[in-house]
Image (cartoon, rainbow, N blue to C red; front, side, top):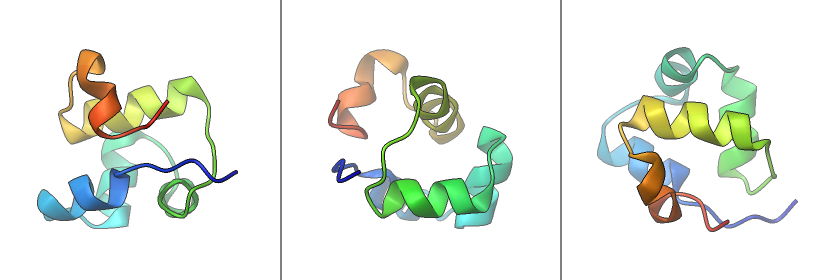
Length: 66
């Protein structure tokens, strides 16, 4: 657990709801909620979220710490 990330800040800056981001990323809204609360997730899930947010994979450190 306890992984610091900036998913919520990036999502809100793009004026996306959790549901909208979940739909774009192909994950459940509950997954987005958990990630924003600091729970860890698989690398594949991080990749889906980064792509949905329009963040290049080489810039993943701007959203996810690890």
